[in-house]
Length: 400
Image 1 (cartoon, rainbow, N blue to C red):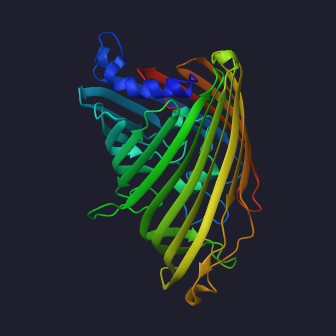
Image 2: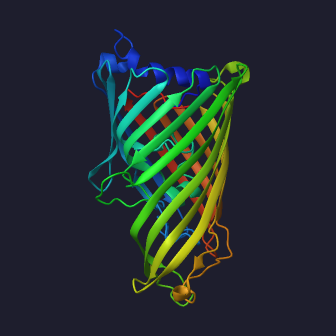
Image 3: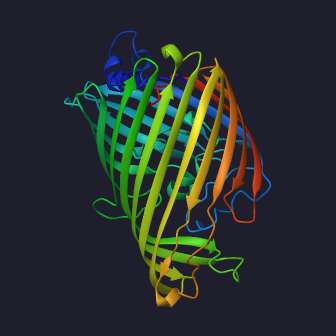
């Protein structure tokens, strides 16, 4: 579950996964139809401030936050199976610790289009960026970077269709497009015909000898928000309790990502080193109804990035460091709300995290993470997390 693989190995696994399901004694989907997996996780969090407080300048965005004290994490149940020689199906169900089941992924994927084409339809994590397609149990840290938490509500999930093309070249070249409903933030899940969100992405990558591999990519996401309500937004210092705003308008995000992996002598079991980073920049413009009373023009450009490095210094043991930073931008407002909305927060949220984890096997992981969170002005927070991740049953290979 946690094994490092090279770029070419990753491509081979993803392309052959469905075909091998029909080989006798091959993939687990052939031995057990369907294959079943269950991820169990939990955390202990020690935080100095209310984790529900959003990053400064991002109060109109979601804030996944953290849990204080002992918390059962979201258990993840996966079902994977080949349907026939043309299709395979995947379903991932999230079991909430407070009760209830939600559908993270439920999609059908083609296996025989040929010419490097692959079609996916249903509910899935978008292919934009690098981290977005990874499930929580595959993250290298307890939480997502600030830019993912603030701009994507941790991950962009979509109901729709995705088409990928893998070029027939020695170098990894992938181009993809998605049409979706727009249900995932920053979109608005509304009943309507047609597409509510569009995504374009492209990735390139290659191996450098037997020791190094890399991948780089760019992404574009477009959607529209309709009457997106944000409660308790501290627009003015005189409103510490906050007000409720409603925004309708267009949202356009561009992004870039890069990852580099190194394994001395190509032996990923002994030592590995991974460096990755992503940058997203979002422009939103439309109408803001301040305190649900006064509508007026509103536009803002916000951005964020992170860079992280994880080093496996001996078998089963890894250390990692991550730095996050956000830019809330300077809002442009019409005359109706010139005196109501803060245009310049004058603060850049940031965070530094360190982690150490131990994996007794490929099915289990124990992690300790410390962070200095300065994402909220005048409220620095020294945080400590302890996490466990346990995998039961068959589980497919992760992406590069």
